[in-house]
Every structure is written in C-alpha cells, then in structure tokens.
Image (cartoon, rainbow, N blue to C red):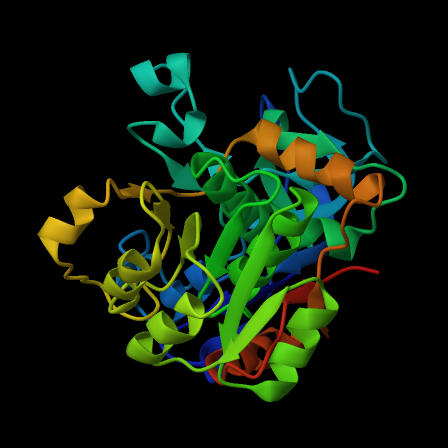
Length: 339
C-alpha cells in the first residue's frame, strides 16, 4: 500500500509518498481501505514538530485521524463487521478501565489519545471504533466529521446552546469554526462569525452565519459584537488574546468553551469581571463516539452538509498541508487515497 509519510518536521515538502506492506488485522482489529481522510490542525502541529504526542523519534510518521472507507479485512473477535462494510472511524483511543471511562464521557480518559494513520491507502484500526456509515453519506463528507464537527458539537453541548441563543465564533472559517456555525444553526441558535477575508465571510453567510464581522483584532471585535448583542456562548478555538475579548462580550452568566490555541498558548483575563458576571470558562477536547454517530445521522437526515473546502489525491497530501499553512482554505481539506 501507499502512505503519505512525514519524514521530517516542516511543511508540505516533508511529506513523501512511500510504499509500505499491506496491513493485517490482529484480534479485535480491522483493516479499512481509506476512501477519505480529512486534515486537522492537530496533523499540522505534528508536521511542524509542535505536538506533545509525536516526537522526532517517531519519524517517519503517518498521521491522519479522520478516516472513512470500506472494511477489507477483519480480525478475530471483531464482531459485527464484515468485509465490504462502509464505515467511519472514531479516532478516540481510551483505556476502557479508568474511572472516567467507566463513568464517561470517554474523552476524560486518563490515557486519552488519538488514532493516527489515515493518510494511507489502508488503515489498521480498533474494530470497536468503527461506525456503520449511512448509505446517504459520502466518504468525503463522513471524513470531515470526526474531529472538527464532533469537537464543535461537544462544545455547543457543554455550553448548553439551544434555540434563540447567540453564539460567537471567532475565526469562523476554519474546520471547527465552520462546524460551530453550521451546528449552531441545527440547534436553532443565532451566530456571529469573523474572518479577515470578505470572500470567506460571504461563504460563511451561505452556510448559515447570521452576522459576520471582518476583523481579527480582539478589541475591535468586542465593540462590533457588542453592537449586535451579548453572546450566550463563545466557541473559542483560538486561545491567546481572544479569551479576554470573549469574556468582555459574554452576557452575564454566559459560557466560553476553549478547544484550541491557534492564536497563542497562554491567555490572561481580568479576574473581577469574570466572577462578578458569573462567567464560565470550560475546556473541551473532541467528543464521544455517540456524538459522532449522532452527527452522521444528522447528515443522513439532511440537517446539515459538512463543508469540504478542497479534496486531494494521496500524492497531493503535502500540497494540502501547504494550503492549510497559507490559511487560504475554507472548510475541511480532505485527502482521498482510494477511489
């Protein structure tokens, strides 16, 4: 089989296509022919050498969390699966025995990790992490769901977003941002999204964003959002300065959910207004396998359509990462290793 391999830390030129042995499943495992695998910022951080999960000793490395495809081989004990099944992988990896695995939700697992290996023609996976893919959902749409859409869905659930709520999504034209806008609409909430690109804001409006603001200046955003209303929830996948800005615009008793650090690893905020306004800041990573199943069913029912910005052949995986680095993409970027 062929795989897109990270041979060094850097940009797209560090991604090479290599021939590797075909995969064989062990007990409880399955091999899938990967028809689609989406890129995430998590993969980009690995490629840049900016991930605590993958060190230089792990190179050469095949990344890729989000895979959809067809089962080609099944190991002993992988009950309920058969060759030819259309499936979607939940990339969560958990120990299954700690307190948090027993009580849930599963992403609190003390040893929580993520699957890697989807940027290849084949992927060897835990069979119990495979979900049946509804017939009406394409592989490419399905591959967009596991990280970006599950993360956004869990953030919205954590904030208790419901009909009529106002949701602020800074940097709303990336994977998680677009997902948060679309899924807020599914929940009948009103949205405010931002970008520095007028073209991207036009596209954001087309997928259901109610209010758009062209700016990435936190101080400007506080004023601009304030002229629209006080958000019930802020979906903060940026971190950095956007944490203080988000708190300044939140309504009394509002919630900010943080899932990323694209704008900075550290945030400082004023303490007194935080507790006097009864604000909440909640961290969030990924979601549950049931969350993913719910989203796949919503897509099958026509509640929303995952936004795919561009698709790439396996040989173009490096170019896909360069496109992500240039921040010119809108929506999910998806590699399609197999036809």
